[in-house]
Length: 320
Ligand code: 173
Image (cartoon, rainbow, N blue to C red):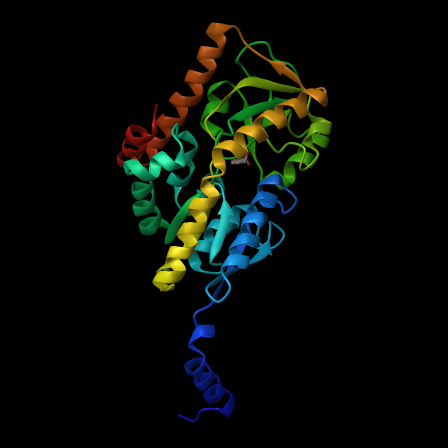
């Protein structure tokens, strides 16, 4: 075999510069739009990781759904097309259906790390998705139904509602006709009257101007939006111990912001919706109970159908 001089030079350079060889650059994409608040929050973290991680770990943020479509980010992480992904589980049920279960957790990620839930999640994510579940970036963000038409009881019969897997069983159980779209298609669907509403967490409806097409929000919220950083498992295992420890440390620093950050965001966004004229629909006590029971009963039932062992473990460890 004959080596080209450039290859030989590169090989020597790698040996001669061990410090440079120990800096790794991880390529990251987001399943959420680049201008979304979630991604702005993420990018502040990336800047910190890069500033403090010189000579060790750098993150190259490639972009949002224009780089890799929302529902393809999971596969891109699984196969190593990218090293890190910023996504919610509902967007990569095509990789593993259990990814959507995390919306059902009722305790924070800090507690999940202590009580074995985090380890159980990682065991499954490693095995089924070739992913390392690095940590949870968004919590304390309940989901809501947003509508262009009024309802006065927990019954969406006759309404077409935009969903992701998060809401499918629940919305169908209360009568809705459901249409799955990534966030990037919600505005057009509303504009064209293809849907009469959509599911989304309490925060973020202004990011893509959906407030212009939204008249009502149903309270209370249900579940808890899970948005996390996932890593390609082979890539993660291939990092040296210092690099892995650094990423874990930065992830914990990010998670430590969660409670204060997302509680504030939920409050601000609720006020902003009110200012924008979005009216709140509340049912009577019995209706509210039926509504919330339907959310959790359908959610867990679907989870048990998909993977009873993992559903049971997660329910036991993360329910209040
Ligand atoms: O697109 C969605 O409605 C969705 O599933 C989701 C999940 C977490 C955060 C934001 C949106």
